[in-house]
Length: 152
Image 1: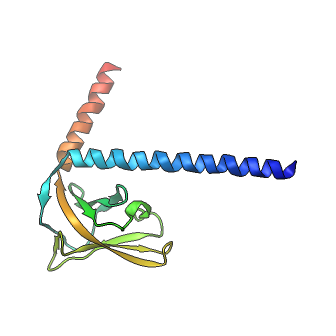
Image 2 (image 1 turned 90 degrees about the vertical axis):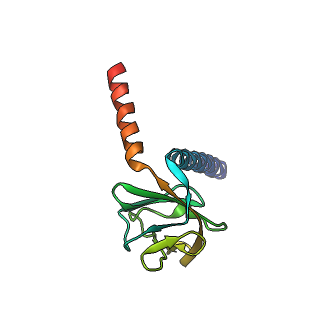
Image 3 (image 1 turned 60 degrees about the vertical axis):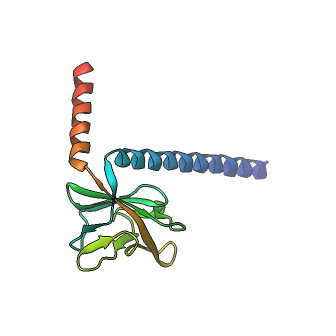
C-alpha cells in the first residue's frame, strides 16, 4: 500500500513538472515573439561599453540585452547553446559578451554563459543581432494599459 502511494506521488510530481516545463517554454516563445515584433532588421554590430543594464533569456537560442535602460538588442546564438537556464543576475548563473574595441559583432563575437550547473562556461557564437525599439514597445504597453483602464 505504501509503495503504491509513493508511486502515485512520484507520478503526480512528474506530471506537474512536465506541465510547468511546457508552460515555461510557451512563455519564452511569447516573450521572444513580443520583442521580435519591435525588432528591426538584422544589423552587423552594436556598441557595448562593457556592462549590461539588464538582460533576459528568451528561449534556447535567444537573449535580449539592455546596454542602457532604453537600448535593447535581440541576440540569437548558434545551437547547441541553451540559454533557457541563464538567470538575470538573480541566480548563480551569469552571462557575458565578447567584444572588440567596444563593438559586438554578429559572426565574430559570442555570448558566454557561466554556470555552476553545467560546471563551467559555454561559448555561444552570436549569429544575429537586431535592435529593439524598446521606447515604442513601452509606449504601446502604456497605451494598452490606459485603454484597458478606460474600458474597464
